[in-house]
Length: 457
Image 1 (cartoon, rainbow, N blue to C red):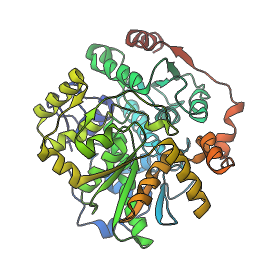
Image 2: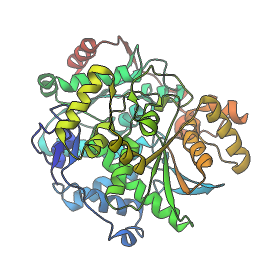
Image 3: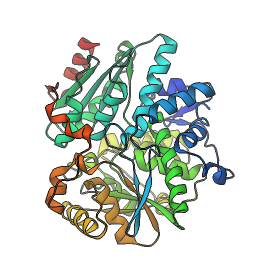
Image 4: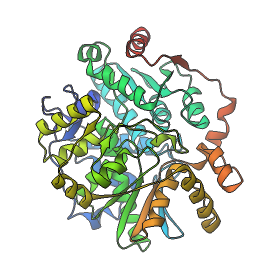
């Protein structure tokens, strides 16, 4: 399997080169040049454990990694999870909850970033190279990325987060990792500001090559690939528990998680629609509802990992929406850059409505959903998962699998406000307050960030 850019100006690369490249050199995002189908293997795949299923799916995209090595990397990655199922599905009330928070940082990002960290270490050792990772986070990606590569040889990691705009637990998880190869940068701005800095750094090709930059944000295809697996697993587990017309509802802001579901469907997973749940930062909901993909000011909410306006993975879906026409994709991304919006035809929107539906929540609805769901099921939702559950309960026209993207103990203030008590803290969270912290506050300035990275590699 070879990889191409959504913008069509980068030479085809292998899987290992795609992992190391992150963002394509033409500014686009990398995708496999074809979509493998497993529609005739669903019964076989449904009988596998999570690790076995991960190997079967991922091996379709990684023909430059020997089979035994790939199995080792997958087993090593998911042995770090406290639940052997990795992504178990539980039925609570009228919905199915797929718990994606059993990794070391208690967020769904661990599913991808434990694997990506091991991919990086494996490839760097093989090539006798060094990598300097730079990434932006709205909360969970940063800590999951740091935990994925902390202490690994030949890797440094620089993570930007918006100062004061992530939860206290998310901040502590990042800043309490004091390994020499980890640098936490708190920028004076929003997540979108941080993401813009990262994209601009990668867009400077000479800088990227000189300082050997790599990406852990969901612009890295390996992130999306790892997430595809849990859609298959979640579908199979829900069916085994009696679900019939399965739909996934996905709390999202960056489109990476939902694109993984879209891609699973292209591979043959029998889903009709995927439901995209947003908070007040609803650019994706506005796009799906009426084709309005235009940026607005970021609003702080109870679900900070979704406080995003520019959805960096949207371009991958745009590639399919544009009929795999790279020139159209490049033109639309240039339109976004120059005007702050993308326009779509009626025909485009007919295709979108056939694939997706959407639902937007408010802080008030998020809080009331946590409260009412707890009263009915004795199960505590985190505020991101609550956005998805609110959508499922409102629509109530299918067997909904709600992706639970974080442990509620990461957002205790919202939970206490909603249910009157704090959620139980896993030991990995309880110990954070006592740990030493390391963080650098830096201006929202591309050149200052680039200089900091250059001085510390």
